Length: 215
Image (tube, rainbow, N blue to C red; front, side):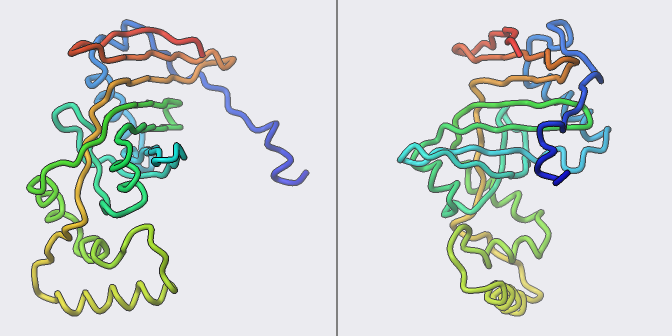
């Protein structure tokens, strides 16, 4: 059988855990922190990898994987080139969605919220602890723009590496962080027979309202 013809028969049986109202509690940020810690302990490859969905001015959605780099002031923080496609989308429509998937734990966390730029000082603080190669890479890549070749990027990287040899690398003006303030957080636990547990927390003013969703 050809590999793509086997898709209809590809499935996993989820039976590792359960998610009840008791285990969910009343604070979704506390539950997220617990699940994240368990994902790290389980050895998920990149537990902080999350899908980031944005929508442009014409209503076209776009999604890609980025890395969570902070849960600060109860907001989800990531960093990027502000001139990238995702950055342009957010400038036009700052409503975004995040999704974490931890297959070993048979869990997902879906988040909807509002993205805003963090302060230059906070971005600077993170930029300074990045590996030197990543700092140079931020200057090398005009993210999402067309380049003539791979060699073009490598030559630019080599040139900047030589220029800043033995020097502190400044943070690009076009680079920095976003913070996503959540308005909804859904916790998904895989269950047998596809009767998955889904607990949704929705923000109403300053309070979180918890409900259970049908799978």
